[in-house]
Image (cartoon, rainbow, N blue to C red):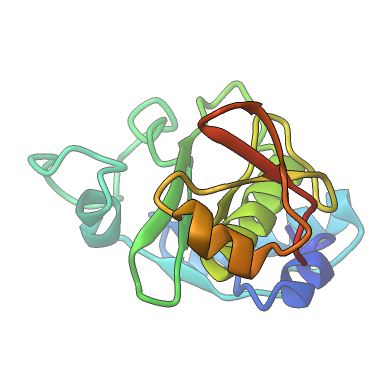
Length: 168
């Protein structure tokens, strides 16, 4: 994440890490991350020792008892989620990773690009879309409104699909 922070900054996205470990444990962790990744952690970390945030966002069952003390990696396997929260404070994307699978931040950046584009331009991005590729006009947009927004027209491989170049 620290290496990719400039990419998040370009998108005006803030990174926050959540850990159910006590904040004191983060010092060792931060050194390990810097040693292995070659860059220091450059974003805030939240210590959630009472598990309140983890329970609130469904990372751990609400009836989980106790706090972080005495928990093992097996107990915390579900606390490996990535959330993208929009300016309206609503969750726009949620991905849960098992302990055995590293997170794919290229995909998360791609999804953020899509979320920002679609919120601004009333389009949808197709499967495997990448920035700069064609997009689809939302079905909720009438042809009349689409003609105003896209005066050069669109391709329609099916009557309900209207493809236009990336408007960004």
